[in-house]
Length: 406
Image (cartoon, rainbow, N blue to C red; front, top):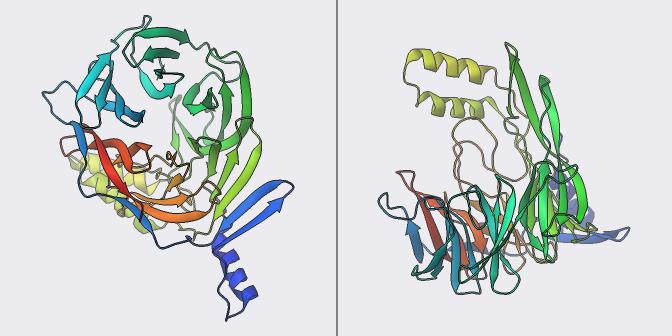
């Protein structure tokens, strides 16, 4: 597959020539194009690397005999209250930042106030939280005291049958709807519709349509199987206080949309495209071979990787898409409480690391970030990062780290 990426690094070289040998090229260029601000970043504005303290200040879960099993969706509410979902009990748990549990509510089931297939939680109006389930699709409102307010079963939205919630902006729910592939062999470009809706789901505003990923469909004896094309990029989305962001990893471009869907700003960053080489595929194959239980399985692995179809170059950013067990990484983009956008840096096979490029609200690349490897943030505040981490026994921990912006 041909995946052409216009490298902004070449723009940097041209800028250097234009400025002459005696004048350094600019770190960032801001221009206006028919009312849309375009911010082109050639290098970070400082050498700062935002990182975390070596040890977490909070560590919940990880006890095979404990009540907290598979925590998910952690968020800090009102600065001092931690909320997360405990999949082991189908409950929302509330705790202080020292880990002391103050309340727990909800139960497994399909009825009002019940929870089952948790997808996310967010602070809602007043002292309440909004909890999203995916199957069945519904939104439940609870007070912080645990009182159940109401449940709204989300009927399929016309034209958006697979819509899933991403977050809240201006009292509206941001949704993405990923297109399903048709049972046709070959490489199929799939699209995603970005939209917002009110809580009841009867006031839908579409923000745009994006090519989300390339999908490889194969047929064998009348059965169709598919997966995302190896080493290809996937369009990323994130929700901030004032904008919804759509990240296009084939060219390192991030589009900032207002809640009404108006394109307000385009952010770009210089990068060097990395070609997919045989050594990358060989590393993944050897990793799979390490798990083979016999020679027949090993031969099948070699055949599979020998016929592996890939993109020509790796994405500019985002979580890698390649065969085998995924590493705990990402999300591709997340907005912190100071409205800075953190963009996950793509890495090559064998070079796993949680590195980030961080952009301020104006779109300028102000710092790089490094979080603990394997730690997946769910909420980043001004001075903390809350997220999930798996230990060597595959037990999930909810952890909080101090963030050092220096």
